[in-house]
Image (cartoon, rainbow, N blue to C red; front, side, top):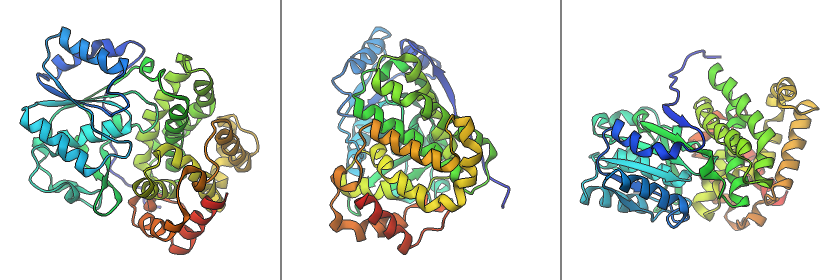
Length: 383
């Protein structure tokens, strides 16, 4: 095992119920005078949006809003947001909403003054070093879901429309300058979004925990992140106003996104291609893919879960963990397979080829080939 790595952990996080009320203070501390508010369509007409706007207006902070963002954000949507940012001479970004809004907001701040195109900075090798690091605008991230953890991420996932592929764009300075995590902002999530985003956080920690890459710090965070989901997701799903469970799920999202510095795997490789081609919800897609991937990796990861299951409060080692995931998906009304998710089987060959090109493959415990990736999709369609 190669015992080396470049490790970077999260930023300044203001966590707690009511923390959103200190938004104007954060703007002043970071010298944000004219931020562009970036959010998604689902949040744009909610109480959260109006609250954030009121807080800024009361402090006489000038701002405008961009909200034309879909659940799987595209390069065209990003280009439109950058145009608004430039034309109105904004000096910063406040990104609030789910992972799509946070991802686009971070990329607006990153790309507004870059010379090269977005795809030059795809997370391959040292592409990030091509960027002008001194031209990245400050970012405040405010998650309203508990899933992606994009608020503490150094990358964004954007769909390349011409190629119908999701691409990961990375730069260390894309990490937001300030994160405001207020669990009260998550209570209005619909049940299916609570489930899907929560299982996204779970998938991050599960895949990081299983990754063969060396990162003991991330390994420990992944283990605790899984435990928080095991103990709290179903409670938050069944009782959306349970702020203790909502708080723990928001922590789980932070931890999952921190932990996957260690690596992701086949779950995300599959989910990225499915989302790009079928526009499915990312976290829900992860949940549909998880059981087949656990079966594929079982010979390598079973000992890990044999050791971890007691800490997670699950009996039966790896087999007990597998059965727990299966039951959790059922309790959260997750589709049983890709057909139920709305994906057509006739694109299976395209899904396989695109998934094998995804960088998440590099963190899977079992080396991914055309043969075993095809089997994964076949099982995921038929399960």
